[in-house]
Image (cartoon, rainbow, N blue to C red; front, side, top):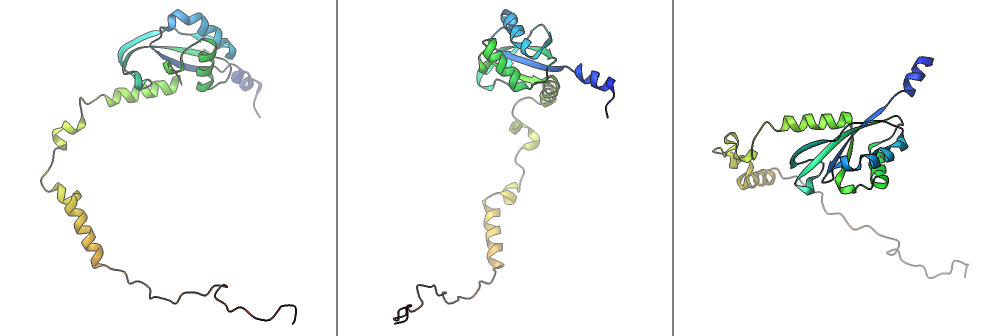
Length: 181
């Protein structure tokens, strides 16, 4: 059973989200955002930070665009979908320009993106991945042909032909009545 202190600690839990917006400067609409988030007992909102103009994973169809992000902390338990929905409905944000993640997920995503930037350009131009002699014999059409020949050598015997089964339609029909005449 939980102690009173544990219950009080559970009541004081807050939920932090990171909101990322494209093509719309959120600093011009912060009052509408704060008003919309009061639904979930808004605790705090950070000042929007402008991000570099580049392609963002959250907005792939917009290409290189200007983005802003800010953190939101609410006291009421909610999900990212609900936060995104309330921002669209009450703050008048376009659904195509808003992405909401939990703060932990956003930080993990950002760390993964930074780790993925350790190479430049396409991987196929890497010299270590160039064509090596004899590689096509392992994966090309000649390999397929040799596999088919190997399969033909190891043929599996097929079961003998059996007579076709009889159905109720094949059984001869009687000429006497079932009623007894």
